[in-house]
Amino acid sequence: MIQVQEEETCCFSPLCVCKPCTEPIPLCTDGEFLTVDLNTTHFCCPQYYC
Image (cartoon, rainbow, N blue to C red; front, top):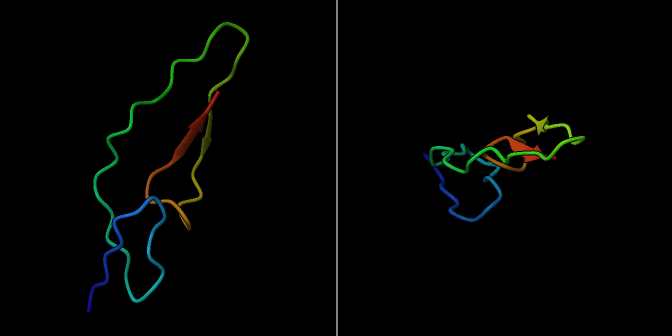
């Protein structure tokens, strides 16, 4: 059994199937650092922040 949720957050049970991650990585300006949140418990794809 596979349950698919197509909103921003992933499904939790019984199995989450995510679409490919296609959102571009942001370009940070001078003095900013790119931070990657690899916690994919609530989101299918990594979250990038400057």
